[in-house]
Amino acid sequence: MILFNIPLVTGKEIGYIQQAIVNKKFCGDGSFTKKCNEWLEDHIKTKKALLTTSCTHALEMAAILADVQEGDEVIMPSFTFVTTANAFVLKGAKVVFVDIRPETMNVDETKIEEAITDKTKAIIPVHYAGICCDMDVIIELAKKYNFLVIEDAAQGIMANYKGKALGSIGHIGCYSFHETKNYTCGEGGAILINDERFLERAEIIREKGTNRLRFLKGQVDKYTWVDIGSSYLPSELNAAFLYANLQMAEEVKKKRLYLWNRYYVNLEKLKLKGSVELPYIPSHCEHNAHMFYIKLKDIEERQNVIKFLKDNGIQTVFHYIPLHSSLAGKRFGRFFVERTVARLFKPAFTKIIIECLGEKCIIMSFRSC
Image 1 (cartoon, rainbow, N blue to C red):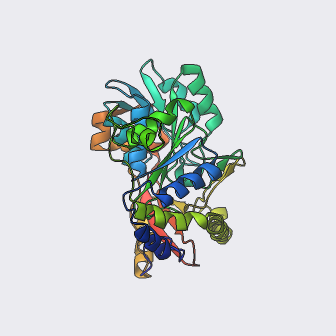
Image 2 (image 1 turned 90 degrees about the vertical axis):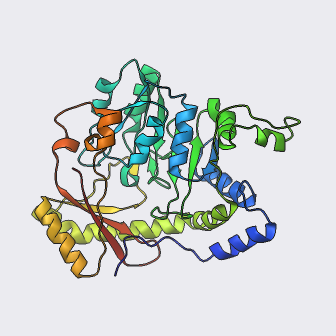
Image 3 (image 1 turned 30 degrees about the vertical axis):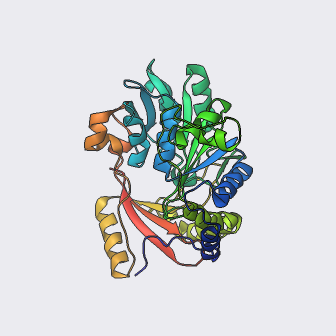
């Protein structure tokens, strides 16, 4: 059986975890946490990177930093994982779902402006499959209407938009290091602070609302509770595992892109016949080969593909159901446009997750509605 996902293991993880044990520092913000933060700051070119326990928690921190309040609105694509919405709903926000572009599966930037109201607090562009949204338009809208841009770059590490790393373009960026991502520590994430206004407060929120880090730096004589916050700091053991992954980032990306391109070349004949649709990469985007997906014409064909794959020992599962059509989506949000891709477009998808260190492919099927 070919499993849906095999987490990346480079070979250095056990040694680094043993080193963390020898250091007798398990709770986070030890040497490996700092190494990971510094690696991200250096490679992503963000003002500050802070490891978190998950991308979910990174987004929750972003919602706090954005001062999202009851009655505020946040704009995001309907085609995304539930975490994107949950982080802001927890703060009392109303989610405004906007349609996607069928060629990239990212938010349709031409439909954002009409969804903006005087209650709009932030927009959450989601970089699906490591392919960037049109950030130029989004950033201009944020400047025009004075709201924040919080990038959900869960799938976007090591991908670029016009030379800028995904997650470093908006005011705040959020990464995932879940075991299904290109680089992993099982469960983990990071928040990237690109706006100086949020640098100090991000550290406080991550430290349960205390000024502990300022105390450790000798900036205050004692630490105390100064703001709201929670326990967003990951274990040092997780950071040790992740650091081994990050050290191989360039090699892993190169391998994944090689496999991604191999899939494209070998499936292009089916595309030319009109049998499938393949991923579209805009010329100004450098993706990270997080996934390779194909779109099929209908549910029946999708089911036939799923059966064929199952018969040949390949595990498949469904992907996102558009959030606006979910029970919680109807309760906590509203869909801005009625006749849309996310509402009407009902092809099947097959998603090929590229293995980092082998020639095998792992396939998952899902549908958009």
